[in-house]
Length: 156
Length: 136
Ligand code: HEM
Image (cartoon, rainbow over all chains, first blue to last red; front, top):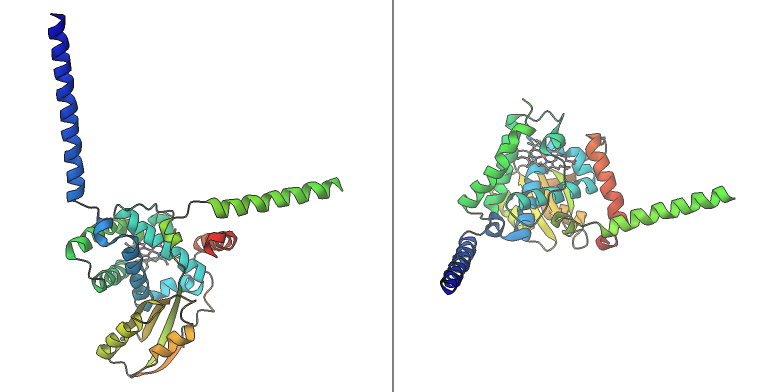
């Protein structure tokens, strides 16, 4: 009787260990199947290249560049904005970064940004993504991460 | 005399604390990137957008240049580059080509700080960067 109980306990233990192992390997496979957006974008170097192209597009864009004059006038301020944008995109794409900047509401408060200006800036980002041949799926995924921020940025 | 000693000690302790913070703080991936220079230019001339697209690509592939964007309609350009690899005047002369007859750096000297909150953040960042030996 005792032997039987022991046998069934060890059988149950074996089954649960096997199930756990199968479960784990299944998870790993799934992770390998779908790399994060960060990986698909090409990691931190690719993101910083996109951010630089995005920034030059914005500063050359006469529809919105007056809003960035104070930033461009101070190279440390430009540096800080660049670092924050890199971290924000990296973190939003599931990369190993933490965004240390202000919340979008706080960062854009009182700037009077309109929907037209917001769309112009998004257009500059799309141009930067296209310049770097980012595929449509990844481009849309990134825009879907940033799009909902509109409510905190636009004031019209 | 005792007062002077205490004040000096407090000052030294304060400076040491700031120096340690600047050098031991965990820098974000964005902060770890090599620092760049961004310059905004105004262009004069009869600008042809196809030629400018070719010029933009040519400048972009120049050593030391990270990014170049030329806006033919707005007659504006912006270049991001590494200061230790290429100078601002070299970047400006790269832009002076073909239909562009004159390139001037956009004068932002009259721009007053903008939003004070952003200015404060940038000043703190400037101070930490100066103290941080990792960024030298
Ligand atoms: C999805 C859209 C946008 C995103 C993701 C975004 C992101 C950011 C981030 C991360 C910062 C830095 C925050 C900090 O300093 O802690 C910032 C600052 C700023 N943004 Fe935006 N932004 C967006 C739209 C806009 C638009 C449409 C404009 C104006 C047309 C704008 C103008 C500015 C300005 C002027 C600053 C201050 C830069 C400085 O520190 O000097 N942003 N933004």
